[in-house]
Length: 418
Ligand SMILES: [Zn+2]
Image (cartoon, rainbow, N blue to C red):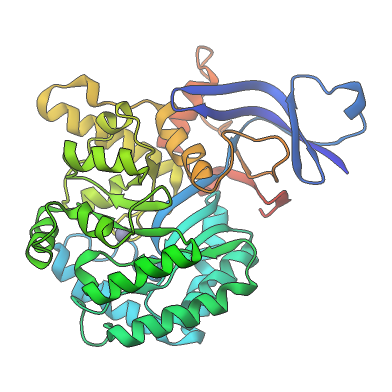
């Protein structure tokens, strides 16, 4: 069946190229993109059109780093230092996800709120609990969200009530992978919490498992200086943090590494060489006083950076706000040394929030023809109508001024979800 949505269509065609289609039709055949047209071709004249007027039609967002069990206390205790915050909120709450009823209720809310915010693709950390992780995957898939979810592995450097034994971690990871077989849209991703929380034995196991089953990996890298010092102490044979993941076969073109705030030229060169994907989480870097990532430098080097909300070190689920935060953080970094080259553009922020993630999932950029539609409709018509504003200007303004209340439609896998 032919359908179409009509509005001002914006697609991230490359890091620096915004595809702009004013008042155009995005035509779908059975939910799959058939093309974008200024006027409907005769062969498509019978398409049922949903006209969104002067609203913006964007690619939906890919949130490439967030923690499912942390969403419920997002914004709480944000004036406390990291370790106090972890002990007071993060760890005790995460422990509650051992209870499947509790997990179901919270994860259903998270899945709903992701859709409301226009996020239809994710790479997400769960907790260490196998059943809770499978419940998270179920709730995401039911809501129409696609992507990867990982059961967290941690057999050290965690409170007793959260830590797994090495044997338990291995056994539960296998049980979880068995349970994942029924899912079609939300797939498993190996998730060592970060290098210090996994013993050599567990990392060896995960590296083997990755190779055997061709699984992707997500973890954290060079987020703050204390963590980097701890890694150096725990893994004295590794010259740099990244070498730990590399040593165990967990550092390649299917690996996402959150933060990379303090990755120096050598570490960044290794990421480029191996094809590793850094995930920039500006809000969290600010909340936890981790530092400001050199995003502009990394983009110039050709790193495949994506954006993550990092809920709830990050304080918003909104990828609109996450784009604005990344633009602001880049300017903060530049303003410390009057280096205007540290700034990033809205084209770059939008690309990192959408097409970069699509590429990680093996899809083409923008609205790829033949793929099921993932899109949002953003109504900025309540904002002042300045005659000089281009669609690019409106996208940038939307990142700073709009939120989920202005998202009037969300499409995922070709189906309207909101
Ligand atoms: Zn994180």
